[in-house]
Structures are given as C-alpha cells and as structure tokens.
Image (tube, rainbow, N blue to C red; front, side, top):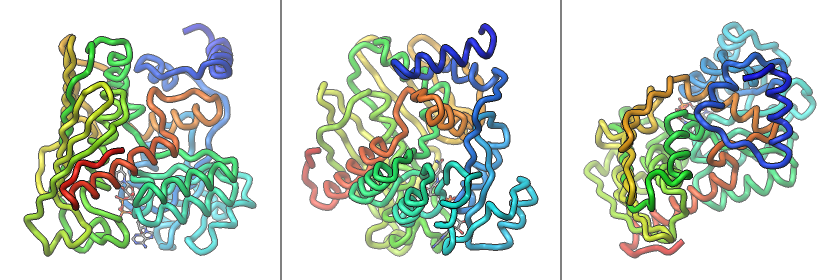
Length: 368
Ligand code: NAD
C-alpha cells in the first residue's frame, strides 16, 4: 500500500462514485494502516454480557471508540467508567438518555438490550439526533423494524444492525467467491444454528422481552447466512416446530424450528434453529461448480471455512473490532460492507422470521 494519505484519498474518491466493497485483504489493510481520521464516538446502551464483549473488542478499534454509557445499574456505570476511562458527563440511565441530544461528544448509541426494548430505545436515540447501532434481532417483528427505519430516516441518522459476520474475513471471502461465480449456479444452502440454553428465568425465554425463542436469537443467523451465501432473497418459506419441554419453552418461545426457504433461481435452503441441541454452528452450500462449508460459521471465532479450492486461511480478529471499525468507515467514508448492515437489511430478516412463525403455526407454505 502506498502512503496513507494516498490510500485515504483513493478510498474517499471511490466512495463518492461507487462504494468500495470490502474484501478480506482491504479489511485487514484498513485495520493495520496508520489512521488519524475521524473517530466514531459510541455510547453503549445495556452493559450486559454482549455489551461487555463489544466494549472489550472496541479497545482495539482505530476508527471507533467507546466514550459513553447508558445503564440502569449505577454500580456497572462506575465499574465501566474506571475500566474504559469514560467521563461522567457521558453517562446516562434509561430515564434520562434523551438528553444525549445535547452532548456533542457522542456520535452513536449501540443498543445492546433485550430484543423487545430495541424499537423504543432506537427511536429515542434517533430523535436525539445520534446514529443508531442496534443488536440483532433489530426488533421483534418486521413492523417494529420498519418503524425504526422510518424514525432514523426522519431524524437523518444512520441505522446499522450488529451483523458482525458481514465483516468477518472468511465470510467475506466466501461471499466474494460467490459474487465472482466461483461456485457456479448456487443450488442449496444448509444452515444449522443452535445451542442448549441454560437458566429458564433469563429474558431470552420471556416472550415479553425476547419476542420469541431460538429463532430470534440464533436461528436468525441461518436466515441471514442463507441470504448472503446464496446472494438472493427468498420467495417462500415452510417451517415445522418441535417442542420437547413446554415448561421451559412456553407459548411463543420456540425451542426448535426446522425451516425451508425457496429462492427465485430455484435454489433452496434447509435450516435448523434450536435452543435444545449443542454443536450446531454450520453453513454448507453447493453450486454447479463448487461448494463451501463454514464450521463454526457464526460463533465468536475463529471461524473455519473450506471450499472445493481448499481451506481459507485468513487470520482471526475479534469480529466486533472489525465490525465497529467497518461501521465507522461506512458512516464517515461511505465504504459499504460486502453485504449491507443497514436497517433495511434487518427488516428483510424480520419479515422472514414473521413468515417462518406463520408457516410453523399454520403448516402452510408462506409466500414472501
Ligand atoms: P444480557 O442479559 O447479558 O444483557 C442485557 C442488558 O440489558 C443487561 O445489562 C440488562 O441489565 C439490560 N436491560 C435493560 N433493561 C432491561 C430489562 N427491562 N430487562 C432485562 N435486561 C434489561 O443480554 P445480551 O446477551 O447482552 O443480549 C443483548 C442483545 O444483544 C440481544 O438483543 C441479543 O440478541 C444481542 N446479542 C448479539 C450477539 C451477537 O453476536 N451479535 C451476541 C449476544 C447477544
């Protein structure tokens, strides 16, 4: 790579005309090049398990920085303030965070709370004039997702969904291979996403907070994966639900759903989403000229991937580091990830989830 100014100059120029698509190579280039451009100053809302993971990974970011906190637990705020050197003036609770609109030192809020809270919280952030980064699932149905998209458009802020795999180098490489026709005509995708969920009292098993069970939490990876691996949008779904523990998995909390999706080209996907089985984190796809397998496919990594051409060797970095640097690059330079991470992308997954729930309930094929 030439000098940094030249590199950034080219980047900006290409972003103005055609947004630059990530490749695994420039993902790492952008991560290893020196950088003194704008920094995305982020407040995290919801200092739970995943919030912790994101905060730790952000320490290694070059283009994004954790600068603020939103939490209902004062002791967490003081622990995090000490750990990440966060000024008190950048800390809020769930009642007063609308005041963030008067804080010029925060650009974006990353919503990492239970699913059913995302919509209202994201809309409040948008109304405060800050960019919204929101965890998956973006809401609990497509109508909520669309309301979030509309609110962010009206407020003229970005809405980005925490699809970290869209920045993961082996995933990006397989998508590049697919776009370049290296698998030929794609025919079939198989996605297996699941784990055995523990504590029955957690919010993930409470419909009022989660909006659903395994599908909202982990099955969404197979939905999103089918779409980015095949490069098409499904036109129908069928689904079958199995429940072995109706006490733990109450009405509206899916334990295991198998689902199928059909695509305009004739390709089909067959997927499993479950809270009742371990060792399920695998994508497989086959086309007329080749095949790809990722296992693990969406865990925190390292991701393993191989194709008919051999093993992919791209080095591992924390997904959330790449994601947050990539999102900053998107916001400041218009450099688009290889697959979108915007609110519309989130709504596409939510529409499919709505259709899968309907198909599982009625036993009917649901057209999209
Ligand atoms: P968690 O339970 O560990 O954390 C949730 C946080 O929200 C806690 O700090 C909790 O105090 C706070 N909270 C605020 N209001 C709450 C309320 N009314 N009830 C319960 N908690 C409340 O959960 P998590 O694992 O961090 O998941 C949070 C979000 O992140 C979910 O949407 C989940 O799907 C998503 N997530 C994404 C990934 C990923 O890889 N992208 C991984 C894990 C979780």
